[in-house]
Image 1: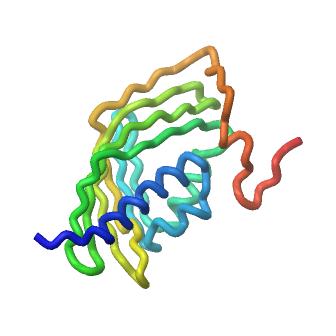
Image 2: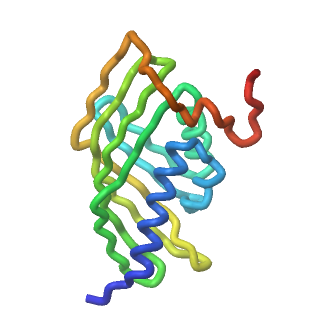
Image 3: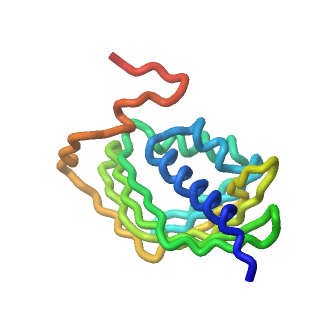
Length: 164
């Protein structure tokens, strides 16, 4: 087996950047993690989100990761296989929390991501990302959480003006 450790580390950093940019609502930062024709298919207990095309996906993410959201996505135990100089696959264990303040719902759970990566012009990007939930818990709440920090509420998305 020929391990391509540098490529594996670059793919790990790519996926970590994806989750960081997601939770911070950093749409500009997310643009570099996807290919233009990226496909996603995320299957939860209460939803299925399928989409194709980087700009369409980024627009949808921007609509969800805003001042009405609190999010924490972490990925663990990557199993990355570099297949060729320009293709790789990966399996990741996800644990996450998403609080929708507008709808007063907290979702927690875990899933297994199965990704495909391509390398172009020296940079790895996500070409396909799918997951299916291992478990999902959706809890409505009547009393809002007592947040002492809320990143998405304090930082306006690029190009937006903050109220006040």
